[in-house]
Amino acid sequence: MNTSTQTVSVPFAKGHGCANSFIVLPDPHGRFRLNEATICSLADPHTGVGADGILRAVRCAAEPEAAAMADRAEWFMDYRNADGTPGSMCGNGIRVLARYLVDTGRCTPGSFAIATRAGIRHVYVPDRSHGLRGTVTVAMGIPAFPGPDDITVTTSGGKSWPATHVDVGNPHAVVFVDALADAGDLSIPPAVEPAGAYPFGVTIEVAVVLGTDHLALRVHERGVGETRACGTGACAAVAAHRHHTGQSDAADYRVDLPGGTLHVSVAADGAMTLTGPAVITTVGTIRLPHAGETCD
Image (cartoon, rainbow, N blue to C red; front, side):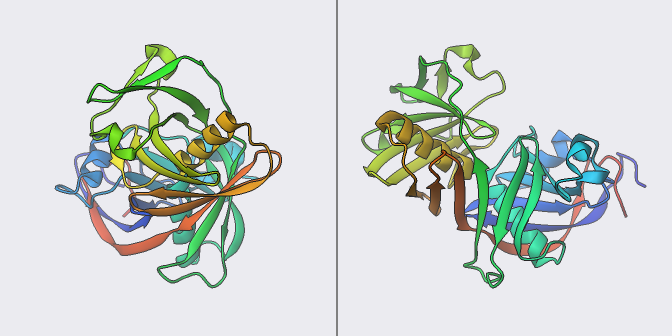
């Protein structure tokens, strides 16, 4: 055991889904906690590994936050945004974590469950997809539209659009524009009104409809900034598009993002699956500053 004033070496992996990047920290026995300073340092490309988010992989039975789900999933995704705040769900992150669990022999290929703060999510890692181009699928559930109906998003450039509140395990505000460039600089958080609509922050999607089953998307992720892809954002944009157009039949959608293409399938009951590349690019060890209780 090490005190918070010490640093320790721990294994890590880095991966991405459509250039939405993550650091994976295996902690099967739940022996360390990540504080905000550690997460920010790791996620910063100048002081750490650099990533959009951190995925601590811990067994549900060893994590008090996930213990109630231990009978349905072995692993819990402790997801943190780059600013250190916890996230309830991450569509690309859970796919990267699934890829890591299979590649390291912690899970077998095929379907298995992963626990998240948004509940249980089932993933599918194909048996022969260990190469860099392998895809991973996650069942995202049925999106919700909790309102209010008068949300407005205003970018740093002063442009405003009405937005649709979509919840896919985390909150989103989706706006539709004529061209993605209309959003301007998305590294600066857009303003959202009414102010109380998202008390814990919101991820904002700026979407263009390219066809009945084809969208293009830019995203400002809460706690991160503009990212090159967002899995839950792709699902939220598809849900908002279907909501606006009255679509209710099962359908498959292509969502183009700056970092690549994701595919969203919608069943007749509205349940969504998200499919796309999940790549592990780097493995090694890293010194964790400001660590709490850690394992040697």
